[in-house]
Length: 420
Figure 1: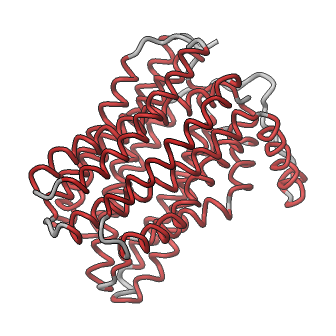
Figure 2 (figure 1 turned 90 degrees about the horizontal axis):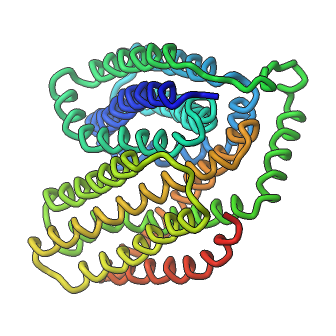
């Protein structure tokens, strides 16, 4: 049994590791986009990762899930960091060989390797919760993780631009290497309490393709036997699909429909990051106790309904108001509430899943959830890009999306409640 004191120490170490990794990763992504824009002058400079990551999630869904559930998580995380550092060093050396549009070749290779390591890292951390903290601290661990991500989201744009201006992209890579080495030191200091029955000893037959598929079928059978997990995965797919309308639509409406500058877009993005931060910090301050079924249901239903309604409200803001000041004020408020609701919902649902899913299935189940979420976003991006470009009022699209989500939520909640 992991004590509360040990759990709190692990949570602090996890926060430090997540903050270092997230801040360096987000800043690096911005620097990579700026470098590609300078070298290739292509509009796709900032979109490569959005294309590669979903493909990696789908292609490597089975091996990554099996890897995480079959090997000790600490060893996976350390090996993962080592691979990323080696990839960064090779990428740095390639900059002296490739230039102009040819730089896209080593970039694609690196982004693919990086996407694989990020996927492994995210899945591994999600599957490690029972080894890091006790059951009462799982939600706090999730909320602290989201807090680290939210803070890095606020800081990374400014840090990315400053670093790129001061040290260039080569310096960016060196900073990334240092950040990964620092994160590895934190991981080494963390204690993973493995289950006594989980020696995670692997023989060669378990690494074969046939056995990989059998292991995945085992986890798929577990998912289908638990309706609550099926409903959560299905709803997360729908929610992420419509969430792409915000990612695509908000900057498009502000710049193309209203012809406002980047300041308004930056203000709305800042409001979103602040909403994430407020939501994650609020949950981290809540007392650690197991939720009753009624409280758990309300903890899911309330932020979900608020999220749906705020998407409708945001559509109303873009439809009713025309001045930059009004859209900046009410749009920021609405976007902030959406981000707050989304992060609260994400933390509660993830903590719930990590509580009810046995450790031996966590890697494969959470990997399936991540893959489902990321794979739907390129489809949503293509559809909503077309819709926004062919409709004169983007606010109507948000209203329509929010109404569909609201109706879908009302139909789904009665089915979820008895399963919690």
